[in-house]
Length: 370
Image (cartoon, rainbow, N blue to C red; front, top):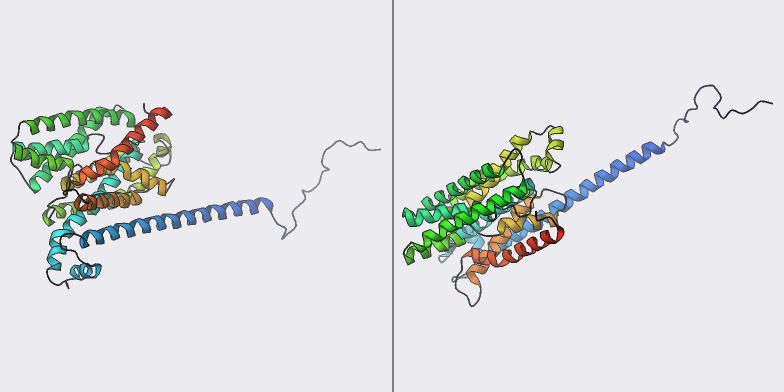
């Protein structure tokens, strides 16, 4: 009798018959198909969300061009836009209403993308231009230009843009010590904002009442009296920086996995971070130069976009949400019943301040405040 040893008899390995199914290959194919299906669904959802947001922005733009002391129907507005307006409709639409409505859309988009880039880059929901001092720097520079130098118009806008850029450079220099810490960046920015707001307050207290009132309206954030001279630089800056930000969104996604992992994937971390910071600050600067330091638009746009499109950088959606928030706020500021015409920053402050308080309470409860 031959004892069994538990070993396979020597000889050629058995082969799977030709044409027989391979379970491992089937599982791999099914996994690949599931990934492709998930990506198609994500693209469809992203396109659908962006389409709805774009339609809402265009709808608000049409409403902004229609309502006012000289009401117009949508047909009359469209006729005026193509040069076939009647009875003064072209003057009202093209010269009085379109510059302001277009400034609200474009400035809101710039604020939205700026906030989205800073929040993703610094990994901190408080990292927005109005929290980390960039808007305060623009406001202080504008107040000094108005009250100290007697400037107006585009000169004030240029001073505001320079103030925003200078503040961003100073905050970055103070907050960066070998590595970029979002928490340290926000703290330094809040301190810089407090200092710059003190400069603004001191300048206002030393000015004549009429000059101080003019400066106060500007630093609150206002689109009153916006004309094509103010819209032109805004369109130029946004036309350059918004496409660059969308192209750089891939680098932003790469940085989201961590510096070491991003470097391992071949991303030049330092160069990518510098480009993104420059783009974010530039967008905030051109928007502030046109509309003033409008509060909270940059803070709320990106979180709303990320909720609509979870798991994505959502810069395009952030731009549309920012445009939607600022356009809707400006309509309320102009046409709220029983109220005089308000600076748009008052309305965005009413909307954004409760969100900021909720964000701080949640961060403290979750232990992420510091």
